[in-house]
Length: 607
Image (cartoon, rainbow, N blue to C red; front, side, top):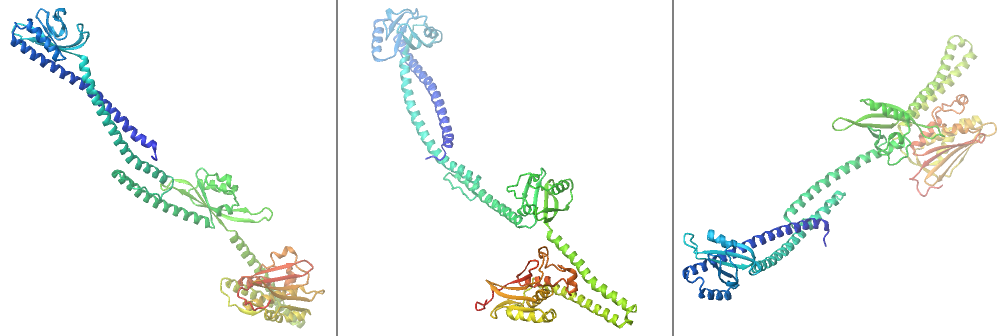
């Protein structure tokens, strides 16, 4: 079955039309020329017969013409041949005829062929015969043919045109049969040739359509037709090259898309009509844009930040790189903002013509926060150092100005200087400790399996002076079988800071107890330090672990705090990949919890 009938009939139909036109023209031309040649042959035959008869009569002489022998000769001639012979005397009278009685015939002297024969020696005509009542072909011959001799008679030979037409018709029938045979044979051969060519051409067309639709791996089969085979081979080679180039382009495009998708920087490409050509997900996330399929849309419809749109307009007017900052509100309730830097560069085609603008967005919120933290840290350190230094300087100057002469005053001032020096030393020590912990964040700790109860007891022992001064007591609740994979020295330091804070700020007139508990929860070890003092207001909890942050600054300095103890605790827990939490309610005490991961804890350890 044909795959493409339309293509087949376009090819084979043209062959049929050309074949029929050619055969029709040849048939008509051949028929016309055949009829003409056949007629000329008949005329030549009639002329030959006329010439023979004229020669015979010329040999017989004038005595033969018109006598009884002449009439008998014509009677015998009429029985032997279908041709009509007529003998006409110079006066036009007919003395012999093979088809009619001569005596009954009118004068033939004025017949066209007879007059032409008298003038030129021979004559011919195709005309209607009034004697026989049919169309006849006449050939006349002068006897003798030599125009210099006196005329004896005119011999005319004729044949009915129907006889000629019958001969031509029989010839035409034979020719028609031959034409039909040739036509059918040619049609069959053309049909087979069309099938042989149209089939591969149809396959070629469908194959090219598949390649055009994106099936670049499809290859055409080589057809049996040599020229088409060369063409298909060239197409397959072109398809190989096209597939390779498209694969390379797709890989390059996918790589670019993957890079853009995984970039933390936001990238937006805008054309000269303010339509978005491309934008990665990071750009949408940074700008809180939740639209999808934004390519081709106007940037003003997708992103509703006037500062960004104004920056884009300014960058279009400038040929140099531009940079600016903007803030993006995260949540209306929280009031938090994201700080972004915007960089704009001109997009140019290979010819150097500007076709758009490339905007790169960078989230510098953390950098700005770190800068704020650093500035706050510098301010806090300056403030914390200024107080003891000012006190030491002031009381030293007072002593130098004469207060040393009074022993009691001198002892009092020196005591203050000593306490302020201790406070200054504590601040410097804690700062150095924080610096050391910061440097250890990305380093591997030397951890080992350590009994938790032992660490708790060591920390409580280090706080005994504070416990005795406050007449407080510390309760430890921990099983001896509980172990944790940690750095014992650092965990003890964190516990000392938490217990010391609980004693200083949680022990009052109504409560002198501090509870330290430890237990296993899943793959973690949870250590809690709880006091029953005044507690911490909720507004302070989010910042309680910041450096130099104090809930009650005056009381903290009075008790000798540096403001860095909880920050040190947080850093120690962080380098153990754990978390530290605080739960407190004003008037009900506070609970600080360290949660330490312990994936290497043996299964035999108790909980």
